[in-house]
Structures are given as C-alpha cells and as structure tokens.
Amino acid sequence: MNKIREKLDIINKICEVISDIRNITPTNLMFRANLCPKMLKDYKKELLEKGFIKEIMLPKGAITNGRKARQDTVSFKLTNKGFEYLKFYEKLTTFKEKYGLN
Image (cartoon, rainbow, N blue to C red; front, side, top):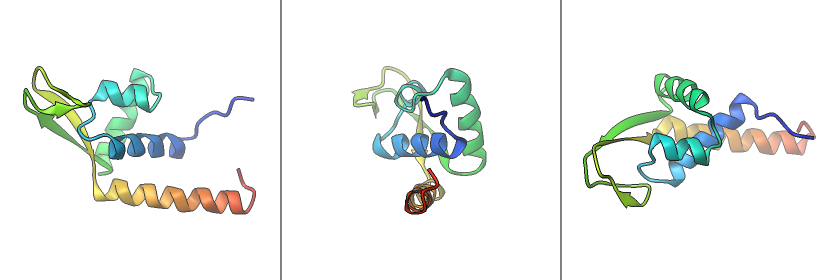
C-alpha cells in the first residue's frame, strides 16, 4: 500500500536535501525532494515565510549542484530554524516508532 507523505515529512525532506547539498537550485531541489512544481512553489513560499530556509543569489561562475553556474542563479540555504526543525523531526519520528504510532 502506498503511503501518502504528510506535510511534516515533506518539509523534513526539503530541509534534509537543502542541508545535504550546498547551493542547491530549485530544479535540483524539486527532483531530489520528489516534488512537483506546484508543491515546490507552495512549500518554498511557506518555508521562506517561516524562516526555515533562505534564498540566495549566486553569481555566474559560482559552484552550484557540483558545477559552475552559467548565469546568476537562485539557490537555497537552511537557516538555524531549519536545522532545529530537522532535530525536532528526528525526535518526533523516534517517539512515533517507540509507541507504535507509525
């Protein structure tokens, strides 16, 4: 049976991907977090508003996704609040597993 991802799971995946990959572009984030374009747009807006991530502009030639950018590029960075969320999510997952609430 397919499990539909919940909002907290999606936010966690986005934060994990951004924390793992330095200077990730929106397209790469969309693919690595398994999001459709509308989901990326909606979650990006929410996470920016709540201060979990910040958008940075990388100049042409900056390293992004392991390559040099050919033009000025938008990228994402996880904030301290985003890192706190990752820690909280890990505790929540452990709690759910411990008490059979999966």
